[in-house]
Each structure stands twice: as C-alpha cells, then as structure tokens.
Length: 103
Image (cartoon, rainbow, N blue to C red; front, side, top):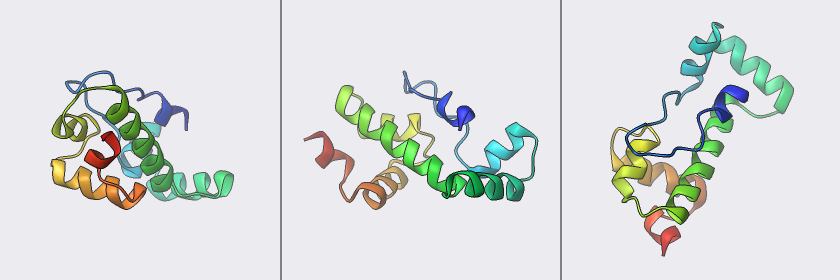
C-alpha cells in the first residue's frame, strides 16, 4: 500500500505513473504476483488490482478537477497507452466520463 501511495500525486504529464499492475508491484517488492495478491487480499479483503484501480480513479478525479490538463495528458500521466483506454476505465469505475466530471 505504501508503494502504491508513493507514486501520488501525479504532478506533471511528463512524469507518468510507473507501476500500474499487480505484476509491476510484485516485481518491485521481489515477490511472486500470486503471493502479493494473496497477502493483500488476506489483510484488506480486496484484490491488489482493486486497490490500484481505486487509487488511479481517485487520482484521475483529482487531476480532472484541479488542473487544466486535457484528457489525453491525464490518460498518459496515469499510464494509459491510449486516451480511449482511460475513458473506458474511468467510465467503468465512476459511471461518468472524464469530460462530464470536469463539467
């Protein structure tokens, strides 16, 4: 959890999120991804991916509300390869589009 929180806040679109998946975190912690997933689930009751997604969603909301970055810059800063992937992710997790949140 500490490793996840250390990546935030994202302060510039030029310095994107480095660790985006459970596999990335497991590698950084030098443990197998299955071990990480099992340990996180036992302690928190929630999957590693769930924690990562929730934190990325929270950061996306913050960036959208407090910066004038365009949607593409937000997407790339959060580690998404394409803005469309970010739009789909955001809508799935919030029920709203990034543009509608900002409006």
